Image (cartoon, rainbow, N blue to C red; front, side, top):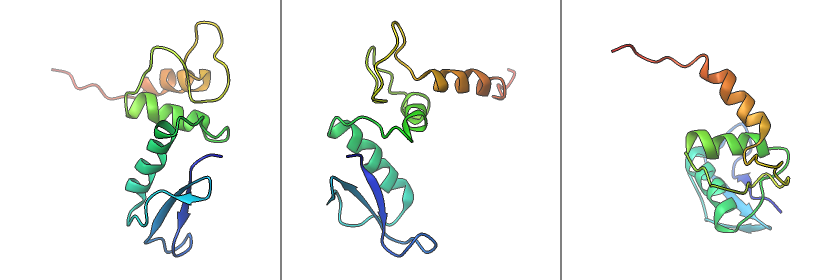
Length: 107
């Protein structure tokens, strides 16, 4: 079972967030979505879980590009990597296309 968000006041008026793994709350209450996401993301590593297949490419992007967690081998996407490939191919394609739009200041 994958970690998930649980909101305290409904989707439109979120002021309390909870993170659940296997129907167990990890932290009593979080007041913002960013710490809730940090706890959610950390749960995948602490409990050695594979990414939910519906979110695998997004979480792989967050892991590798935003957090710079790039292991030498293995992946949390749950799909066996193709020979010689450790990163989700959709993430590689996105990063290549996205890099064309990055602003690099001239010195």
